[in-house]
Length: 340
Image (cartoon, rainbow, N blue to C red; front, side, top):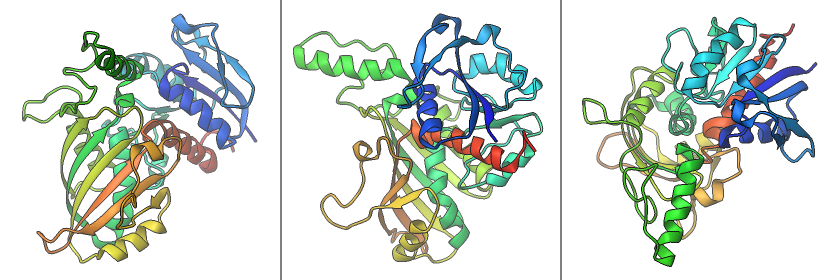
């Protein structure tokens, strides 16, 4: 039994990654359609490395009737217009934008953490979390189950791909400009990103935090537990792909570093690489193209009775966006929400 699937925003970074992952994971397809804005209508794009090409259809004239699943990677604007139309046509929308994440009647899902939440998709819409939240809660969930997390302090080191293709281009052009002596221009970022870090992602809020930081707090509460106190500092770094996070966790109960390693090694979606030696950890360069969330540098925090520190790295275009969406689609298929 196969499914009719539409990938909306198929020509963007995340949309293309969705197509790659659908192919890699051999998602059961009867039909696959690439959808994008009218500017891309008629373009041919690859369906992974299958050798098959898909002709892009315009979202403005696309009819979702008869489709089972729509993977949206088009941003909040187009999603606000077209996701309700797809849902009304009986299509299960899995949305990567921030538009529906905090809607009380729209489940926010990370399959390794809260898979049963998909059953609450009363509006035919399921939200994908923020990329930085997704990898973090994959790491936190098994530890929370074991020792109950009280508080989390996280600092993120987020790659430019999280801000889109234009951001990746800006890092490249600024880096080149520095080497050849050309003027450096900031168009996407507020400050130079090449050879620099910027402690500012999304807009500033009234309390001095940024919207990205607020998202991590609110989404963790919705996905994992509203009882976890969490504070975040989100930083953009000159890395093309791969988000990193330094996570400090305070527990209600004792959990040793070795016990945490053992738990994480057995947990879905996680790869522990934690050797206390030169190079015995994972960096963003090494995680690119991989499905796993990598955990390293697990160690005791001696400043609290029950505390651990760890380093968390993941390919943000995969686990943080495209892979998580496809995993949700796989859950939808297994639960037979669309086909009996």
